[in-house]
View 1: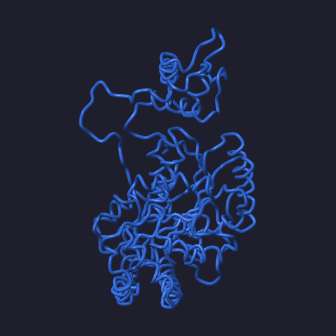
View 2 (view 1 turned 120 degrees about the horizontal axis):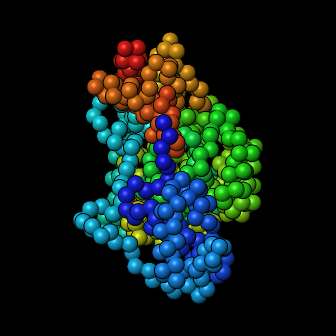
Amino acid sequence: MGKTQGIADGGNPLFKQVYDYIVDRIERGEWKAHDKLPSVRLLAAQFKMNRLTVFKAYGMLKEQGIAYVKEKSGYYVSAGNKSNVRQLPAYRSEDARLSASVHLKNSLNDIQQIPVDYQFSQALIDPNLLPNLFLSDYVKRVFDLYPKLMGTYSTPQGDAELRQSLSRYLGGELRVELSASDLLITSGSQQAIDLISRTFVRPMDAILIERPTYSAGMDIFRQQGARFLPVDIHPHGYDLEHVESLMMNHRPRLFYLNPTFHNPTGYTVPASQRKRLVELAERYKCLLVEDDAFHDMYFDVPPPPPLFAFDTDGWVVHLRGFSKYVAPGLRICAIAARPNVLEPLITAKSLADNGTPLVNQKIFLHYFESVRMRQHIGKLRTALQMRKDVMERELAETGWSWVSPQGGLNLWLRLPDTVTADELLKLSIRQSVSFVPGDICDPLGEMESRIRLSYSFVNEATIKEGIKRLTDIARG
């Protein structure tokens, strides 16, 4: 069941999105005065829409003096039109009513908000696995160290002390020169993705996106009106010839990827492919957005170095989230990037919330630098591997198939042909079991035989009971 992807469901009508797409490229300098614009036929085929929709957009461009027509030749960029472009009024519907200007959607959140006894849809750490009493002690200690903390704002870029600490940590791990000025602190990885999307993606921009991928991340880019070019991820990584072909032919703005203990599959892209991806990004000027939320959650062998470690030309932005396994309630993520990428993101962050709460950053800083933190991560890896092993044993006799991950929080399973994920989810919710259906992780919306089960949020006994209930439901 294919679905139209990459066009926002609400807000501006399609012809206005085509109009914005052309205007944006003129503003960027991609099309200059008297350059020929793509034909109506070509754009209609590219965006899979009616030619009349594109024709209406070109009519608006001509009316505003942004484009002109040569008979039997096509549309061209007008000379000296920049002032016109920047002063255009916003589109107003004839039937304007008080309503949201866009149709907001978060499919993953919709599932996770359903109260159930067996919660396999949350890729979060069970709170019982966190050192809660120790964290509580650190909260008291931080307020002793910073008595005026509650009355102080953070800077938009983030607390200098925390950025200095994380730059040492990440610089040592990545074996690259990294300073506090190369980092931006955000309120979790999801905010980082949102800032990148709003800063670098305009309506109908082409972006590469893994298939499958993190559902909420996909919804964020879709909200910006991005046009998705799916890249299949396999246990061995990507088909890099296909990636290069997409970069060469479509010139995407960015590639959003999660190459380490990938969500939802658990796959890890090998080091050789990481180096090659960075080379392709430099050649085709495609920003690589590396979402690395699970890097420290390996079971036996540490994963390969992040893509950022291979970047020498500023084409990788690295998102290192700590919410998943350090202290989810603090919502701390570090964006590592070079100045040309980081500076506009700092401005976007200042407009979003003017800085992640300083209280959260200081508490995280002092816990992160503690010996107990290192001990916690080691114990957490062991606990997560035990829970994964329990889930896999319970699924062993089902006939369902999966590739056992070497880290992360999830199993990515293929169901038998007798049941679809959506059908199973409806029945499971009634029996107080939830999981993530594959189609919401698929840019094409087609992975109806796939499901994601998270083993991190519930204990071993609950995993056994919940998986038995789930597989009984699947058998009918």
